[in-house]
Length: 232
Length: 282
Image 1 (cartoon, rainbow over the protein chains, first blue to last red):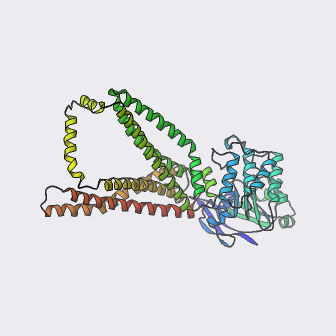
Image 2: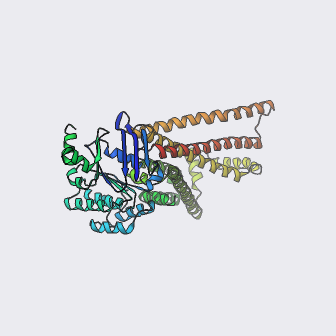
């Protein structure tokens, strides 16, 4: 079942072209890896699908309809940076999500919080970058969304937290939803990816099933990545 | 909508507390100046004036600043990740501004009432004497009485309550049309123009541009009415404007000004909402 489809999708910031003619089709039940060096357009693509950016050209369809404010009810996006108000603590971030997203599961959030060693009374400004990343993952994955867009979830987290975050993400996959992951740490996420999308300077240079990519090239995704982006 | 209002208030919690403390300190100073009954009591008036201007300016700046910060990266992501329509967002800001301006007016009214109460209880009559001694106008009290005598006969001819009501309404409409112009300027700056560190400057320029254009439009709409009325007066060979004619003329100007403000608020609301829904870039 196709959940997200982009046609000739482009995004410009002034004269800079961040994405150029991107065409992808994302289906339920799969984990997609959007991979590429810094500035290749990974975050731009995710923000366009999440509705935080407006497209310059092309089309985005979510659930067979043009992307709209309504689509946000079913799309959970985790950005790379902290996005909370300074007055908040962890408990009030959950309240915020619970207030605005009908699919937010408070019980699941409590469970994830416990697993990640966080407490509701912790103030946002006092969190380390790793704790903030764990909170963002916990909030995003506590939604029962149809599309999860997880941008660089492993940035700034330690080894133990990394495994926990990956486990949380993988456990959220079902036959009715899909997960899009972006990360520089390809060696760590390679094994969980069903499909890989390589982005280079805003254009797609590879879009394949991970297994097919490995079989046809005789290389791992990491090796393929190094080959494609050796000049980047 | 209620959820948006709740978080708008929560965000402003610290600023509201600081604002409350500042108002309290200012009012204490005003009361102290009133109580002293010496030359420094002129400051009670000065501080009341400052408080009135400060309250209005604070509501205006706080409303604009909050709206602008919604388009910044962190707050913007949290806000625009949610399935909130542009209309709801802009409306929530206007409702909060209305709550704030009503609250500020009540606080100011209370401050004046309290200062007046203290002055009456202390039998304070020093202010007019103070002005007289400062300016050398010994006959000031007599002049005031004469002025009051001249005004009194007009009271029966003018619906004072209506005029006061209209005055308050027009001030509110002008206040909100200015907020809406600022919202529109910020939204255009953040959506239609490319993102860079000068976005605030673009918004400021657009704000002044829109304000100037609006002044011209208002002038162009009002001018024919003024000219027609002057022509009418000349044709009737009337030298003095009667109270009823002046009132009718003022009503016309108030109505036009009010209609223009309503038009600005509605069109600004529409433009900002559509741009937020269609062209947002956080």
